[in-house]
Length: 340
Image 1 (cartoon, rainbow, N blue to C red):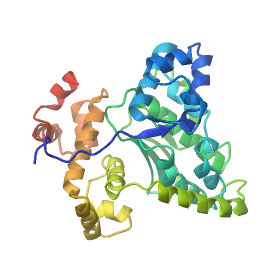
Image 2 (image 1 turned 135 degrees about the horizontal axis):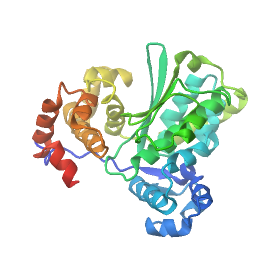
Image 3 (image 1 turned 90 degrees about the vertical axis):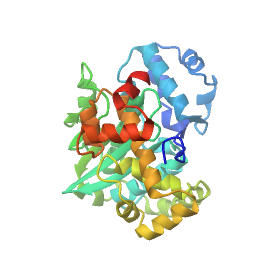
Image 4 (image 1 turned 180 degrees about the vertical axis):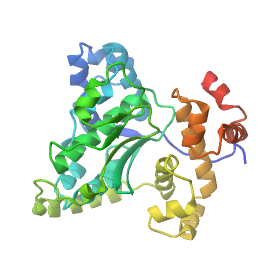
């Protein structure tokens, strides 16, 4: 089966305006006319009037690009994310803020992300005494992805400070963008060592913090709100195929794409995973191949070398990656990058 006949994964997601509420103020403070920016991005002038309005991720990418062009600010995403925390997430934010532990709160936010943002995937992993919150954009064709990543990971940092206390800082903050000429703003906000040009935007911290009690939680409020969130999530459920794709997008840069690994993360056997996918008329290998190509496209849009991309995706060497890419697309990664 070649690239033309493989089933297409629908990757273009949406985001609620509530996740971007700081953007107009940031743009205005930088001297830009936000209404003009909205018009140039092809968005309605009143789209920010209601926090529950929804725009596509393609529109979000255009909006961030137009904001950068209008302001000349290379750290726009960081400035937006710095101003947003748990309250902007609505119901899921209030449930998380009153959860028993940090682990419970993050689990709530990650599971409920699809209520406000279906264009990105957050995940939590633990390894060798450290925990990692990661963020990945699903669609490789979005403009200004590094700015969206910056905003998302800054919001994650603010969420951790809301849960653990204002002095919380990660062990390391990993950012997908190039190192800025002056990284002082990043260093001051994250208050931690920075890694630029990372494969995945993430925050790394001591895993023992996951079992801390959430600061200032109200157990009674949690008991009232949690069932409402469960109902909202049930009404906005994703297809099984979409859930698997979300996991694959995170796992591809942290290890092999294997049915057992995905099934384990979903709390089922590999056989059950296969059966559910078959009911949606697709196989695990087809989804994995699509996600590999999608991820390769996203990384090729960065300035990473072909060798680095091959290593990040788990290929033995650049030759193996080039061969797989050519087999899937009919062209080489270098030629695709030049023509994109």
